[in-house]
Amino acid sequence: MVEHATDEMQVALPAHEIEVGTELLSRPVRNSVGGWPFLDEAQEWPECFCGERMAMFFQLDLPADLESFGGDHLLVFHCRAHNDATDPPWDGGQLAQRYWDAPQPPYPGPFWRVVLQCNAVARAEVEPAVRALQLSLRAFADITDRFGRGAYGFKVGGTPSWAQDPEYYTCACGTDLVYLCQVPEGMDFAAHPGQPEQPYSVGADTYNLFLGNEVYLLACPAHCDPAAVWPVNQN
Image (cartoon, rainbow, N blue to C red):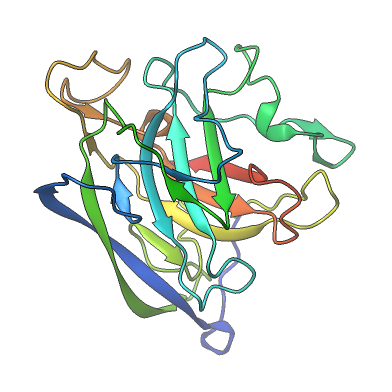
């Protein structure tokens, strides 16, 4: 149960609201839904356990005022064919070794990949399934409410707006994961016409992340691996 916080416990942290544009992109842009992935040269385009290349849902350069992650480039991939929620793999009180590659019951492997990188460059091939739209960031002070929750919405930084009880995890490297970004419940990502319909999606022309759950990305501030990010799902 979430305990009530007093007014004295309210805090304001730097955050950025993420706004999605409406005009289809025709060139690589570092802050985008879909589009051309910006990846380090050694990073392959992630594939699902089923062998299908994951769709890139969105990417953005993290603002400099985000402690531990300012200047990193964030990318969120998810399999079009496998639309499900996450289940944290535990190992003695913390996330298992290489938890980003661990089985996700009933599946033998992950159907998503979140990546944080520092030397990302644009790939020549555009994301084929998700429509390419530009993202813009608007800075604001994320002030917690009396329950200790931050502002609801599509944002990076600040405090999560936890739909249920707060969740905290320790990375396999022993470092406590830190909240980084959130995607609101039911957010739709427009698909290109003619693309296969996503299972359990609410529309034939849109895709969702993790069954449309509210998603909170918790990342390792030690940067032990580019994929050391855990996506918490709540509704």
